[in-house]
Image 1 (cartoon, rainbow, N blue to C red):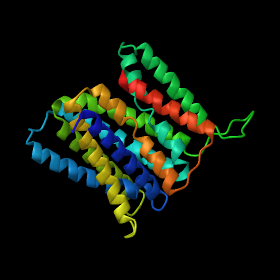
Image 2: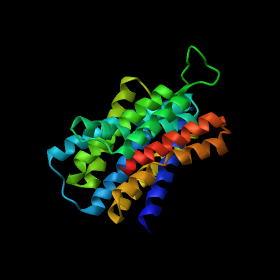
Image 3: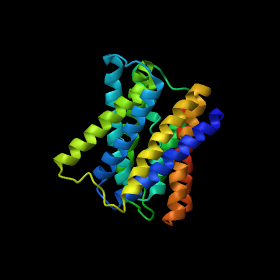
Image 4: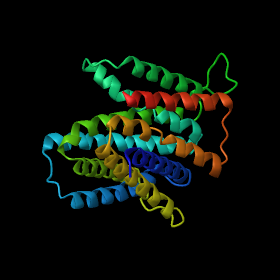
Length: 278
């Protein structure tokens, strides 16, 4: 299977997992969704490590992977909660702005984005503004439900990417396992501290479990895609994951966005793809 097919399948799996996570978070506590789905993802990552037979990396690689896991857990919690309280067609494209964060980190290190990436950033920001503004608001702008959480998710996912990049030299399977182990532990500690049950209702268990399965499958597909072709191509194609979320929200939940919001979604997604392309 080619690099484009693997990356697109990975994007689709991520999008489906995010949709199911948002649906589940509308019916049970977001920490319940996070604990179960991340635990399943951790089990999948552990199986990957066993199959790969790679030796464990050093502490210098494990620490940024653990940091990535913390950021990933925060990002997923914000994303699922955002899609539970707001329109998925608004929240998902905004969360896709995460590639901007590594660029800002690079800028702080003295590495300036290319002119094309600056254009992508402008498109992302313009798309977010269009998506975030409630229709009909005039002098006192009102922010649509879920937008703040979507921005938190974008920031956290961007930092997740930075952490993975710093840790990946020690081995991708171990990086993913460490990140998933950290995110699972954080979610479990938060759930126990807040006295939230980590056992979803029986009718919701298949949905919550599917979140972890789709998310883990996406990670594996995208990781394999990077071994077969350009990482830039993989980044661009996998950044299209909100498309699946938006399509499912339209078909299953009947979500409708006006023409202006649809334009904002296209701007945000297109800009994210341009930024990821480098």
